[in-house]
Amino acid sequence: MKRVLFVCLGNICRSPTAEGVFRKQVEEKGLGGKIEVDSAGTGAWHVGSPPDPRAQAEARRRGIDLSGLRARQVRVDDFKRFDLVLAMDRENLEDLRAICPAEYQHKVRLFTSFGPPGSPEEVPDPYYGGPDGFRKVFDLIESCGRGLLAYLCRNGEMGE
Ligand code: 4NP
Image 1 (cartoon, helix red, strand yellow):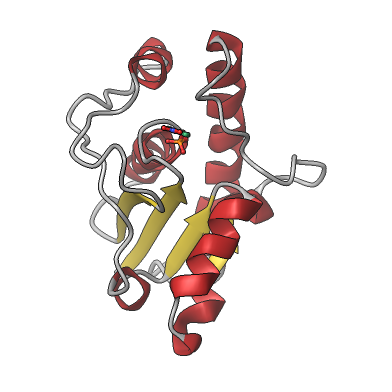
Image 2 (image 1 turned 90 degrees about the horizontal axis):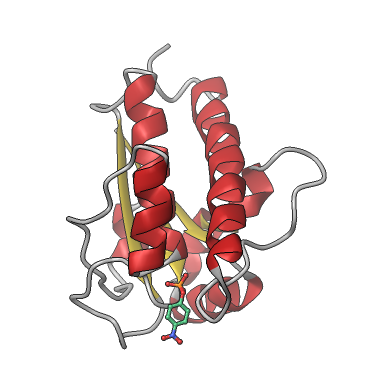
């Protein structure tokens, strides 16, 4: 079993989208029993809330239901439990590194590091923008998710 945690600031826009998209990609490959997916936020403002309606709408348009997800904050024991803790942007990365025990620092990475060459360096925060931002975020998450799945399979960690 491999465990992947997606992390953004609020856990209502980017990381729940990544959780839903990547879970679908994993299931489409028949790896649902081998890869566990979760998401969390570095901040606590939205704890207990469902994903932002705009993120839900974009996901629904692409056949993914995010309505059952609820925001939570990252906990220090997440760094032990998960194999990869993937930050959406540099600020998330720095915040995670600041609370991650030294022995687990290698698990903390930028999600976009799994994207195809030429990918943007960050998944931009769409919260204060329009619907176009949510569309772009979704597309970027999809392409980085495909790269992440290929990485996990390539490393022979999935029993293939
Ligand atoms: P997220 O987006 O980090 O992708 O969930 C945000 C959600 C809420 C806020 C900022 C970003 N906020 O400032 O409340």
